[in-house]
Image 1 (cartoon, rainbow, N blue to C red):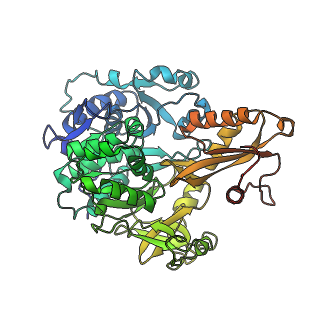
Image 2: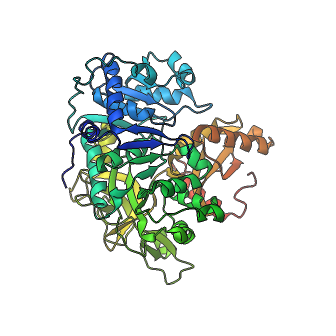
Image 3: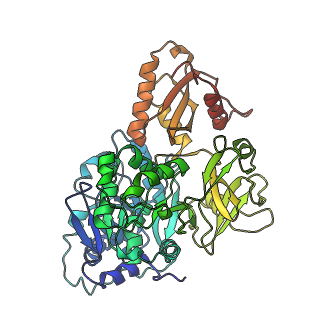
Length: 569
């Protein structure tokens, strides 16, 4: 189906004229107090911001958006688009965050201006000391005169106009900004809308979202997709749901939301951290579609969640597994069947060998949840990553994507763009996006089995092992630089982080507890992530290739095969 709008800016202008009430309701405490922002008011405020930005920039310039939790970043985002600028959303500053990381990102984006709030301005003083970056606060921008505001026209963006650079939570030492045009983002919104078009009552209620608004896909779930569908959105701060997961379910119940989703860990948290008494107060009969993505989907989690909440109206058919990443989108399983999620139980030994063999034992088999059929118009190929030849069904290989839902490439990185976005099969077919993920096709449906290289997905965060290792190595002088490995292991149905680090010979009698505690603090401060295990080993003992390259997968295997993993944990 053809998208309803050519650009994000024409979408907001149209929705703003459809009535004064449709928009988002923000719950700053996760429940109770409400703040309303209609699409009409968003349009008005965005115009004020745009006029201030246009006075200090030119169309096509990059503007960094630095905001905390709350809808201010929504106004800033559309204000920048109205001015013809390219948005570069940044995560809020964290304690002890290395200044060099944000400098590298801003330098790569060639940001010409920083848009933030007066509240956060003191937090970025150290950044600004070393950067000649002009700053505008959202409060100052909104004081723009209303003279001739109604007759003022936004920049005439086109579908190919660049809207945003998405810097993935991967290698910040070598930042890679995914280029997202207006047309690309609109096509994603249209594809999701088409996927759920058969749900008869979906638009009868609002959506609930608690994903971070500073991430473009969190902004998409909370604002862009509801705007495209012309429905209301209830938005909760991420921190309030992490603190008390029941707030998410209460919002669905109270506002009679028909759609709301999240990563696997969020559904598991609703099993583990919501009491029986709290669950009894809910009414989830309204919940028609519950999208899941961003990390490995666990069958046990979905079974536990469905069993726990079926008494208050949740239905299994609401589960909608998706597969996509910052660079592209491939599948949405929105089928309304009562036996969801769809899964296969396979022999784990055969799977390790790249083959999919149905397991005859429920206990010994490994359950893998289906991500559904490819979105119409999208190509999903399973490819031998070395030979670049397409594999047949029930063979494990790298997932390659093709079609209009693949982004345009990496900002100012032609070589990386050619390698990742313009891959060709050995037959000459292409171009395709190399996802770096492993999976297989079974009866036409996509199943994801893991990551090809060194990306970890923990608690819904996409993390590169090299960043975790680099950060950990700086925690204590006893640790050998570039001599550590990071990987994840499954603990209580969730992926958890393990770090194995070599120590210098002169520190072999050092206080182990002191070193491991320093590593945990460093990782916690930088990534807001707990560490399941810190393992210290002798210098030179980590597995390496003949050329000296660390072997993360081999290290993980050694860790799992050892009952103690290491004498130093």
